[in-house]
Amino acid sequence: MNKIIDGIKVSSDIKSEIKKEISSFKKDGKRVPSLSIVLVGNHTASSIYVNAKVRACKDVGIDVNLINLNDNISELDLLEIISELNNKSDLDGFIVQLPLPPQVNVQNVIDSISPAKDVDGFTNDNIGSITSEVKKLLPATGLGVMTLIERYNIDIESKSCAILGSSRNVGAAIAQMLMQKEQVTVTVCNSKTKNLKEITRNSDIIISAVGKPNLVTSDMVKEGAVIIDVGISRIRDDSKKSGYRIVGDVDYDNVLPKVSLITPVPGGVGPMTIASLIQNTLRAYRNNEKR
Image (tube, rainbow, N blue to C red; front, side, top):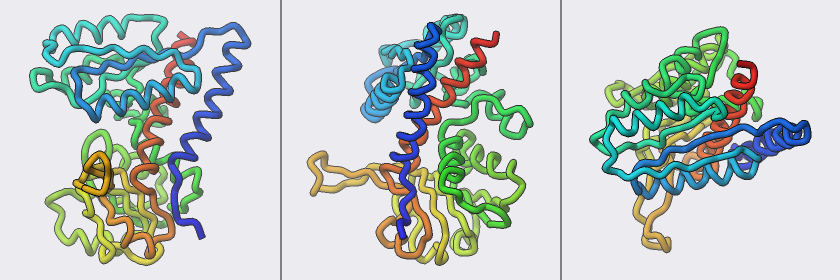
């Protein structure tokens, strides 16, 4: 039995579906969806991630524009650029890649983005729509997790799910998305949670979004559980040319024998976040075309 939830394959399937749709736009003489990505400074990890987003957009036919800004940019100047992007009628969506330099208040930036163009799904309007009957542009990582659950036909009815990590844009957003299904019992855990091991050992599904290597160990997981590992960290590994390797929150090798399904890191949720960004861009495009 294959226990691996293959985020690379699912994201590839989604991108193929979207590529076909965008090709049909071209054949019909319509413009294609457009996306801008704002990258502030030379943060290595951000640059790698942004380049992956740019490649994915180009692969499916989205008109993508990368805006590189100096890391000493003032908050006011950045907000002015965001205002210009908000007002570009032929731009369907944009993201401001995080993290930002210390002189820029992240929440001020997020609050300044038009919800209609917020393809990361970070604005209050979009996050708030999770609990509404009318869903807007949902947080990309959470949407990616939910897509994996749906496409792998993971049974959540009457199941218990422990979410490790309560961040607004990831852990809390995923919890809200799951609770809208009204089929699953959700427990959200954080660094102050008591009896964490007891909670996880009684959970049918564990979704970890903490960013702490090997947080979830074999003795925390019951037989047959489903594990979705959203965490990503770099740890020292002298056997690698780079001197490090990428790992998730889960002690993968030791947990794998106990589970029914698990996402690897890398290759699990990460590719799905990019696929969700593309899905949101297409949705923003459709909404823009209606206006």
